[in-house]
Length: 315
Image (cartoon, rainbow, N blue to C red; front, side, top):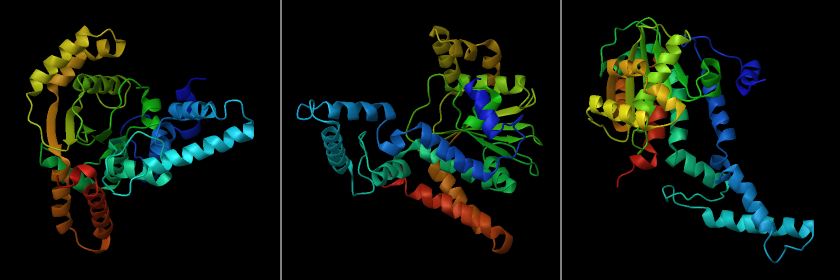
């Protein structure tokens, strides 16, 4: 049985993007990320961790020792390495070293793009349709009244759609408005040299497999640490050349004329985390107590998380 079939048998699946995902699934997606990304738990990857233990057990002073002597030696060396890697200032630059649970949390909470992505997934899945209409409506036309469905990068998405070649960040789908927004979340990093066409490939596969209608409007929505104003057509041409020069089968598919057509027909938006923060602060002012208290707390909580990120601090 394939890994994707095992996943669906245990955790279920979705048949189209107009499927509502519980906020609790966002929590399990966070755990799923941690179970695969062990460096965010141990400080280093699982492979590096076991290799380190083997290396320490082979140190000259215990190489010929008993199992108990080797265990005591490895335990002592790991404890010392953990102490050396720990930082007491919230924004000290993190290292790639074995870490205590406290240090691993510090690195993830304040520096990790993946951790921010998971926070965003939960937040985006809980905000109201009215909020998303207003937020996206700043950048492109959105007729109010439709329902939004949010999907984060997870085993549920990958195994249900059978799309493994494209690691998207977050999708917002509005079937009432026939609109798909791909939220690409950046934290200081640059756009990948094949990113637009790989998103176009993802769109094409979603349409072919019945997850979205063929004529769905497509928006690539970049949120980063600053606003960018590139020549999107020029970037697409660069990506076409990049994919054509590659021998990778996925990039050959991404460079297919149908994907190029999708990319050239898409809309593009670049905004920043600070602008999202400001929008949330302004939007909160329009919310009253009572039934709107929950969304107010939600916006406040996400802004509080954003405000603590290392990239948000004065330089």
